[in-house]
Length: 116
Image (spheres, helix red, strand yellow):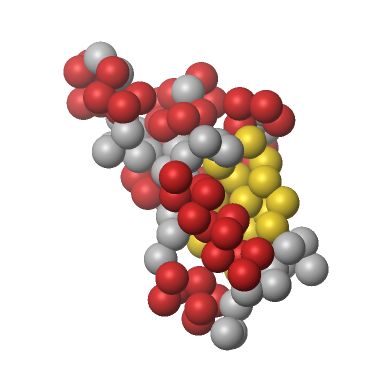
């Protein structure tokens, strides 16, 4: 069964996630935002699952480079606009397999989610 991993291929956390999924027979398939693009409908669906506050990676270089007005006035609507414009701001990876939806990498959560 294929496990979709959304992120950026040169991200260390995405690399660690892909390796972990491969080692645990989950057949990961990477969707790289930079190469494969970002669909607005998909992003809205992920916001519904995780909440916009969780999707915004406030530890990223992209976040640090945003102007203060954007950072200080973020809400659901503006966050989705900024994430579409700058997908590197999305916390990664996002892992989807059937009814499993994970944000970021936490080995304990992955073990529980994939019942390993």
